[in-house]
Image (tube, rainbow over all chains, first blue to last red; front, side, top):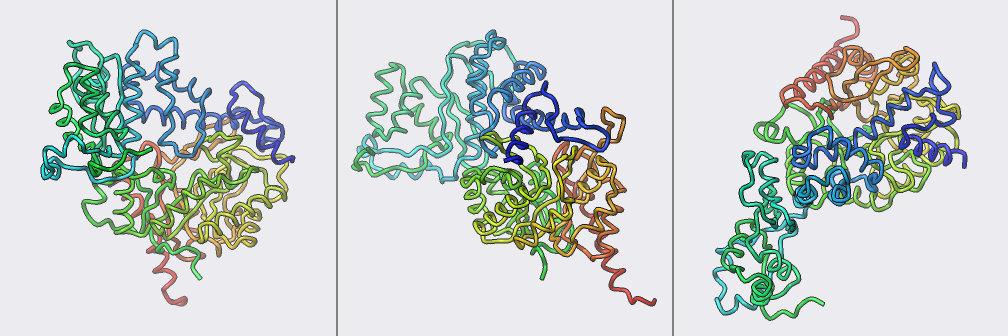
Length: 260
Length: 288
């Protein structure tokens, strides 16, 4: 029991910068080596903040590195990692930013952060061979409407009321910084056909269309649902975005029963 | 019998930013080492790159999240992921640390120290047994870089490591930089530590950079930062070890402020030169 208590005391003190050095922790020159114990405190905090900095570079660029560090430290203190898989640390950071009062004046920030979080998940998603338009063109036109698709494992849709794709592209080096002339909500399609994570702006109705495809609706039904939600839905433009992102893994048989 | 299957030559930590340079031409190194946890995603570039390294070089998997020094049970899900990775890539070597990194459901992302007591010895032995029987392979356990001591400790670190190896059959990973850093931090002798270290159980050596500052009492405080070249004093300790034992698989670790590939490669080749030199000296007739 003594060793369990020793470790829990150490664990709690490492996460509490103002606490005393735990009983029993010594050094050759002190019975309470505060600076030495602080090396562990610092290693833990710097490690977590660096992981967030690496995962959210565009978010960091938008708010500046000092603001970001402050937010990241607070997040790390409140929501430390629960798993040793550090590449996925920060999945909840966008929601944290959405509730973070000082970030309120940048309302699109959580959206950009969600886009960056989705990019990491796409980067590490399982591999699958994307379906090419050429492979599909062999299918009969009348069978197309009944066809069901499996979205590539890396696919995520990040919907936002803000132009997050444009803002992300300007803050990640993809595009030059410039005033956003067309300030309207954008939905992102994130995918990783092979090695590179790609981000595309979805055409109108694309989110509903994709969500329906993901739920295994046949193409025709998915298109009808998208059109019902958005009269400017354009099937050809949406299929083009899907294929450009190589976001489809393969098709099911058209007559296959929907999954329960 | 050799403690690890890695070649008796120098290797380097693999960093993804070096992949293009490494894959462009054959590298004169014996092996690459990766942090196991970075390859526990489903797919993508990490697995493609690891697959390339596996195909062309000997491979060492180095875990940083197994929590062997914890007083809590091991994370079975994490151990299962590790087994999957070992089974898939069949590394020549798997190593972990005499440290803990998770507690109460929180992952600390750092290697934290433990008191060397009989109770902790028993729990570490149980953990190493469980890891080895699950993975179906021998583990190398690494000596830590520490910044504090524990009043509760009753067993010297070298004896603690030797006792674990004796009880479990595991090998040891001797991190010479950690030896230097810990000795400086505790005002003890690195050479005396190495004399007490069971070198016959060593399957791999680690070398890395550290930086030195001072603590609140004005004493030297070395930080094991892995962000700079190996210092000459650490190379000298390395020379003294291999002069008595012969060459070991020797890794240059560089995890922060990672330089361009040629710089890291040159550092590994400097270690290789020292291995070559000692091989020549030991092969020479005693009475020349």
